[in-house]
Image (cartoon, rainbow, N blue to C red):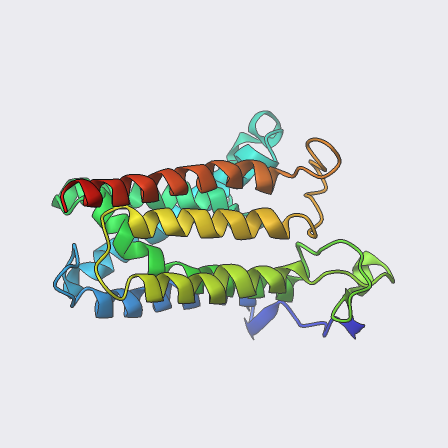
Length: 263
């Protein structure tokens, strides 16, 4: 059994200004995406050139932040829409949804693709391997904040988090860091080392992330305000991840079917 190391969520205090670890995790994710994107944009099959990566990052980052907040309110705190509608724009109060952030990123990439004519699905294929480092960093931020804990467990690596009581729990944030950050990055990076059919990388991202999230939800506590949605085990995360898996599988099928047709 392990004990939570009680990490201060504030990384740097500059007078009245507090810089939180969670915010720094966003910077790490965006910085990693920029560096890897600049490198990948040098390939002959890239839909953009290296100097365009800054613009792609801006469109994607704005979409991630706005979509993450809007998605959180819509999916997890819908009562706020009538009780306090302005809460949907107060991103500094915390509460972000990956699924909302994904939709926001896709909206941003669609706008950029429409503006430049580089092809939306080619752009999402390009961006797919750039995302997992940010996802992994975000889960480390969740761990430092002491949020999104798992169910009580007696596995050897279970961790006691005092504010949650004396029972050891699954460190589900670290599971998600490993799967959504490390494993997803390695899988997508290796998969995209050589050119793939359009939609294949995007499809693989959706299938793997959706599957990883669906699995971890079995040991992660559901959001307190929602609880389980059905059968005492179905969570909102699983409901939102299921369409991702199905859409990803469809994209991969169409990608390779189209390739086979013209081969």
